[in-house]
Image (cartoon, helix red, strand yellow):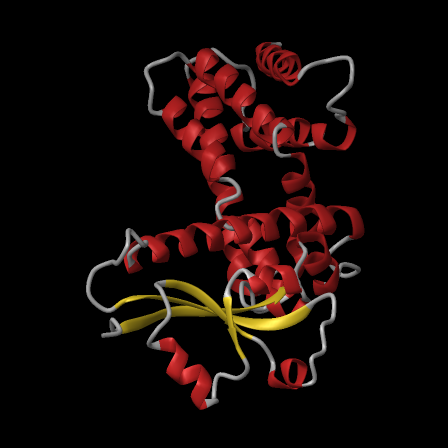
Length: 281
């Protein structure tokens, strides 16, 4: 007696005839033949090809099929994969696809600029049709917002660890400048898009970005202020000093080249020492 099956999920894909032949193909999801064949299929996947193509015997190089993933309603048969396992695999593939979309969007926004870039550019870069791209993201603006989300989290986390430590003001500031410069150098495309395109963000996202910037400045200002009060650093305006240091450190994205004469570490170490000398004059 045929084992009852449960539909897990489906997705619409473009397949070659060879790829389609590797799955079971029925002529239409609405035909009695297709419905009847479901009960006798093995757990796994099968494709439903368009009736207009199969009825006329048309065999194009690529055509649209709907791939259904099915598993037994109770347990597994013949060592087939269970529904939770297939679900995890689908989530992993979806996560990998979303990661590749963000990477492509970042690269294209950097090369073309946000306004000149299009969703079609991004879809082409990841091998998707434009309509399929909207399954993962609703708009170009949402993509930009996603790129900004959490961009500063790693550096902010490192700075907080440093300021919560027991080092002297000099030791803390040296470590902070080094961490900040390395964060810029190791994320050049992200920093460039962040600096050049923040003005096109929607208000809520822009407020979040400005809050991150204030937090960054406050951390530097706090350490510099402590140093000025105890005589370690010269000066009376820690906010101005913090802004000057952050401006100097951020500007490296304009001239740094990965294959240049100096390594990321060498530049970060040099900037850290320069920062200390600037405040010890």
